[in-house]
Image (tube, rainbow, N blue to C red; front, top):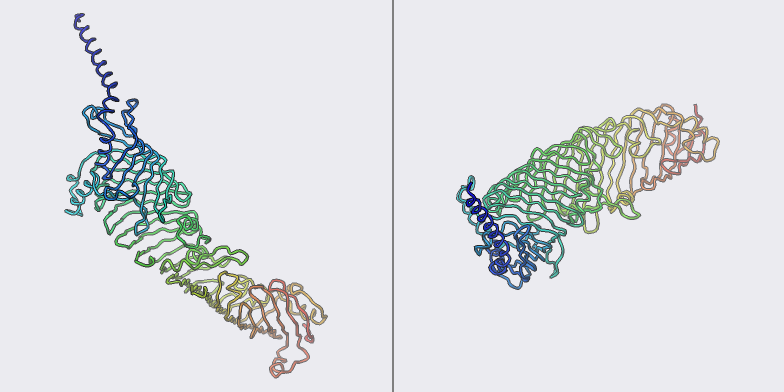
Length: 616
C-alpha cells in the first residue's frame, strides 16, 4: 500500500476524532444556549397537558449520558392558576437525544422525578386519583383511540391508533398527598417505581413500591393495549398488589369506560381479615377476631355488579366452593350466594359478620356495626362443622345481614347423635343491641349434650329433646347471659343418671352433715325417664319442674341456678313411688329424703334436710 494513501487515512481518522471531540465539547454550550429551560418546559407541557414551570437553571451533563438536570419543577392545571400544582419535583433528570439537541430540538426518552409530590383527589367511589389533564399529546392520543374504539367496540382497528413515542418515567422517594380541610394529608410515602411505555400503540408496564398506612406495598400492572384500555375499550390487563396484610391479583381483560368491565381470574389472600379491616380503615369491627381468608375465583364485573363463579374460598383454613353475587348500590353493597364446605369452623365464620372483640373487664364484646354497612344473604352447607367443642355433620345454614340485623340460622344439622336446629339473632336498635338465641335439639344423647353445655352432673344419659329460648340486651357475651330472659325444657326417655350412686347418696343424707356430690359419684342410676322445665329471668334459671323416675325412686329438684355465675340454690328430694301420691296430696311420707344443693355446677354440695328413705 502506497505510503501517501496510509498518510491520508491517518489524517482522515484524526480529523474525525477531532470533530467528534469538538462536538462533544460543544454540546454543553449548545445545550445551554439552544435547549433552554423554556424549550424543555414547552416539550414537557406538550406531552403532559399541564403547565410546566422550571424555576432552577438547567444543568447539562454529557457523560455517561447526555441529560438535563432540572430543579424545582411543577406541573399545574392550565385552567386554575391559583390551585396548587398537580406535581412538584425537587429535581427532574431528562435523558436527551444529542443529535436532536444539535438540531435545536428536545427529544427525551426517559424522565426521572426525584422526590416528587403528587396531589390526588378522592373520587366518588373512594379512590384517590390525580387530576386528569385537559390537553397534551397523551390526552389527544386517548381521544383518538376513543374514536377508534367507538367505531368498532368489539374489534377496534389497532392500525389506526397513534404511534407517538412515549418512553419511560421513573420516580424516586416520592409521596402522594390529598387536601383535607385545606391541609395536605399524606396518602402514600416512599414512592418509588417506573412506568415504561415505548409508544402509544405498544404495551406498557408499571411497577411501584411505597408505604401506605404504615405498610410497604408493591403494585405491578401490565397491559398489551394500554391506549385501548384508557380509551374505554376492552384490553388485556394483569394487576397485582402485595402487602403484609393482604395480596391481590387480577389476570384477564378490562375496560375503563364509565360503566367499567372486568372479566378474569381474581385471587385474594390475607393472614388476618381483622388486620385487613383495621388497615383499610373500613370502620368494621377493627378488634374482631377474624382469621385468615383466601379467595380464588372467576370474576365478571360491570355496572355496579360483580359475579364470582367457581369460587374457591378458605376461611381459617376451612376450604369451600361456591358462587357469589355482589351488587354495589347507592346504599350498602349486597352480597348473596351459596357456599359449600367440607369442614367449617362456625366460630370463625360467625365472627366475620357478628364480630367479637375484647371489652376490658366484661368479656368479649359483640360488635354489630357490620350490619349497618352491608347486606348479606348466604346459603351454606358443610359436611362437617365445629362450634367450639361441638361436632356437627351435614349442616345446612343461612347467614343474613341487613339494616342493623344479623341472623345466623342452622336449619338442619346432625349432632349429639340426633338433630340440631339453632338460630342466633343480633338486632341493633337505638336503645342497644337485642340478642335472641333459639335452640332445638331432637333425639340427642343427653350426656353428650350436657357435657357440651358445661353440665356434667345429674344430666340424663339417654335420648331426649332439649329446647332453649333466650332473649335480652347485651354488649358482651357475658352480659347477654346475665340479662337474658327465656325458657329451657327437656324430656328424656329411658337411660341413666351417670356419676350418681343413689344408695351412697341416701346413706350420706341419713348420716347428716354437708358432703360433696363427688363423694357419691362412683355409680350409675338407671331411670325410666326425666323431665326439666325452667324459666329464665336475667340469667337465672328457676326450676319449675325437674324430675327423674326410676323403677324404685323418684328424684325431684326445685330452686334456682345461675348460668352466668354457675351458682346453685336448690332443694330436692328422693321418694319411693308409693309416696308419690301422698306428696301430690300435700303429705310427706316417712320414706322421703329431702336435701339442699348449693355450691356451683362443677362442685355441688349437699346438705340433708330430713331423711327416711333407705337405699337398697
